[in-house]
Amino acid sequence: MRWPDHLLTLAEFDELPEDDPRHHELQEGVLQVSPKAALLHQRAVHALTRALTAQLSAEWEAIGPAQVALDATWPPTVRTPDAVIVPTSVVDLNPNRVHANVVAVALEVVSPGSRSTDRIVKPYEYARAGIPHYWVVDIDEPVSLTAYRLVDGGYETCFDGAGTFKTTAPFDLALDLQNLVRRLPGR
Image (cartoon, rainbow, N blue to C red; front, side, top):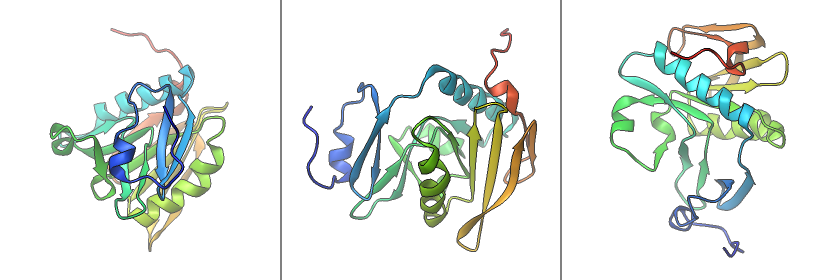
């Protein structure tokens, strides 16, 4: 594949190979490329989406990773959070990406190389796009979560810690953060 030497359109971004062993995002038309997540990261994302979906009403579900169009105008910005909580009706439509206005929560699991992006760049972008809640999970010991809620166009921290994360906004949810990185017995 020849790498682009110009700002990409959404159509050009959509033409990138799906089976590429890299993670692609688009920041104001600039292609951002990073390695695919390591296995512990993937375990945490899977455990997170499974635990959240089990607690959500049938109208909502946690899906991950999912492309989110933060700004579809030129130059476009498309991020791929590790998970999002979106209406089930949107998932049922089977889109390639969702627009930020349907995302209730965007979630990122920090990886080596994404710490600054997840903690500085993405909060700015997600707040600007109007995503009401943004949660960042750090799987380094002790596993922790920082939860932000949108207030007056910016995020304010409403939880920052380890152990059990409990919230009533936007949904009644509880997460045992340590269980995100442990292999739990299956059925």
